[in-house]
Length: 73
Image (spheres, one colour):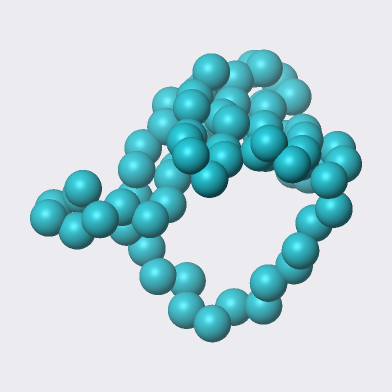
């Protein structure tokens, strides 16, 4: 909960600092990704059936996101 509202997003910095946030992105276009590894703006994104791991390529810090949990590392 953030200020009495259920958080629905996370903000992750390159140093591994994770903060829960409340946001509404509206009706933006959605891009479905396949289960594979991607690289974008200094991050490696490893999407699998179990969840998605985001790793900063410089610091090696990041987070794992699944339906059940979000974990920073």
